[in-house]
Length: 128
Image 1 (cartoon, rainbow, N blue to C red):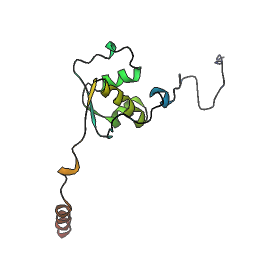
Image 2: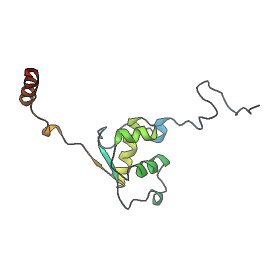
Image 3: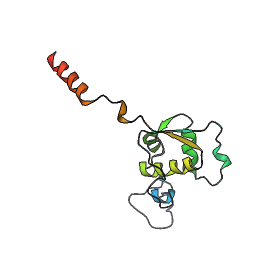
Image 4: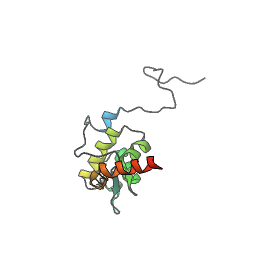
């Protein structure tokens, strides 16, 4: 027979779930990062960055630094940590402000072909 845990019981919570923390508690109630971060922006931790040297970092911050040892997009970090993208953006913003990571935004739309070139390609494909 399994011992019941003290406190209220919820049908959405089982014994294997462990502690449940609301996302806004991870960000201290903040919902916007200090800088805009695109979903496909790459995050990269500095080579000599040691998250253990920063005792005030939350475990999620430390995990982000470890994951960012190689360039990794913001969206992938969110998936890896199983957190909302908004939460990860705020946490990455914290790390960026402390100089622990750098963020490399994707190239802008200046490198995309203009509409005339795309129309010419479509017309050429239709002619085949």
